Length: 136
Image 1 (cartoon, rainbow, N blue to C red):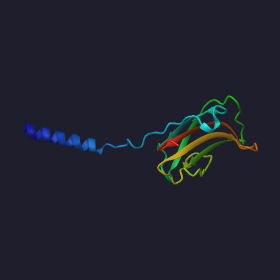
Image 2: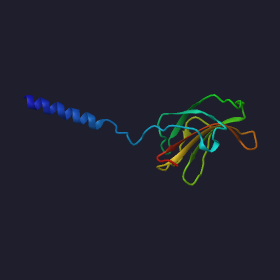
Image 3: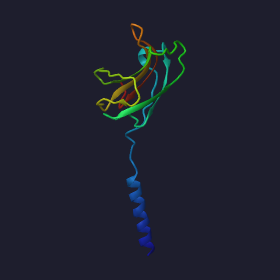
Image 4: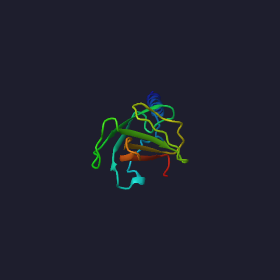
């Protein structure tokens, strides 16, 4: 009888462990400074709300915060720029919540920036980027 109880507990434990989601291959991405700007723009803190990393075809929400020391945010001029860049460098951008993720490859760069769209060169105030899948 003791062996039967032990076997039942062992089976229940095995089924419970097997049912737990296995997500070692889907780790949250970490944003760092934008290499292209060196230290000429401020670093902004970016958190992905919901599925992290983003999944193809699904909407993603971003929580962006920080302190801009070199520029002011101006209503109707300052935008939030979100770009997904693949190896070929093809960007897509949109400024909204529930940002739709494009068809994503296994590795890509995710760039989030605060920019002034009223200036001729779209001046970047703050930036953060993350490599997903591999280092670029």
